[in-house]
Length: 343
Ligand code: 1HN
Image: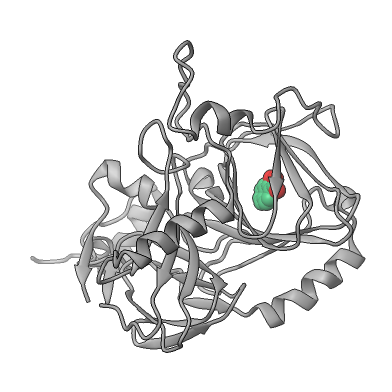
């Protein structure tokens, strides 16, 4: 086509009217496969731990609201982004400290990395936090944390903050009560919903699991029993999802969570997934190959796997390797956006 004026000049006139040509950006928009800005990355516990304990000295829980080192993805601009949709951070609470009561629309899950004797009070129920436990604080639930033990307690926080921000869905409310009054019996949500029974006289109509705590001794025992029976997938070994007993689906509407057993000597099959996944080493050691790069992990290391990266689990050791992970798959699946392919 004949052009009376240069494209550059035309584009400048478009821009002045808040317009733009699609034809120059289409190839960067309709990419054949996902091209996330998040990069594969590993945070080593031996590097993180001393900085976390230094933060314990430098700032009080009171001052900080939450004393957390954020796992910032080097490929992403935001101060709170581990992936395009997920936040991850490592929180520490000292003996006797209180992380005051608040609530927010982002969903949170916590996997306890070190220590015991901490607790979260979630909507009036006091939930124990000991090493290996998974504890959730679903969207808009009141929560505060404390530590009745004599040593600091450390956990991995997973939240859907970047997703909520991108959807302009952020709401936050501090409570006037620094610590919540406990209004439910110990183990109430477990007794109501986690025992293969449910209260026949009430309906739970929230989009998340009514179970707020998945203790490690139970999850670990289930994993080991399935592994002993020879179960597992060629890609993930024994991958067990923490589920809502009501839906059979993910624990939170926007994040699913898994405990995974990779048998000694396993070199599993590589796979791509359109979810992004944050892994935490729980027991033993292993290697996550991501697009051909080896990320060797040990206990309490965190590894982030970007969407559509080629992912392969290897356990070259003589002991089982146990990983915790969480992902954004529950947001992709209802919209037909979740895919897998052999890599
Ligand atoms: C939050 O409320 C917690 O309650 C942890 O422990 C991390 C990161 C961003 C925003 C809110 C918590 C958080 C957070």
